[in-house]
Amino acid sequence: MLTEGDYIEGRYVGKKENVGSNNSTIYILDVDGEQVGVWGTSVLDTKFAQIAQGKMVAIEYQGKKQSEKRKGSSYHDFKVGVGIDTVGDEDLFAQ
Image (cartoon, rainbow, N blue to C red; front, side, top):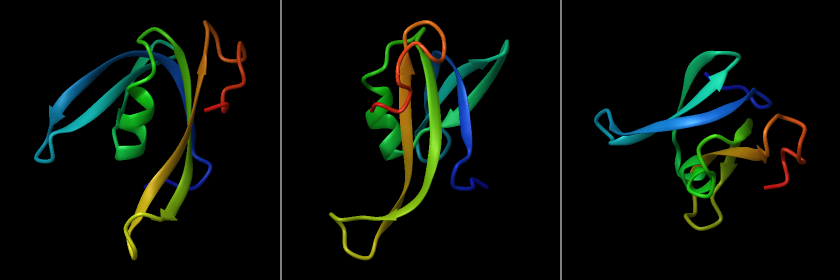
């Protein structure tokens, strides 16, 4: 289970689509030579659509937020930052 502030960083190397009964996406990060899968959410899917494979990314869980669009509904929020070649090349949480 995710806790607010949980964080992962690595090189975005690919994705698997239509996984599981909900046809979800799994984003694959290379973290210190190990491939780690991160389950997509609406928030992550939107942000990863703008990130090229090969970029360094950092993802930080921001906790559950109340939806402004759908009253009474909540969602899992994430900050996603993108670096050039290595973490630290850009402000990782600029997005």
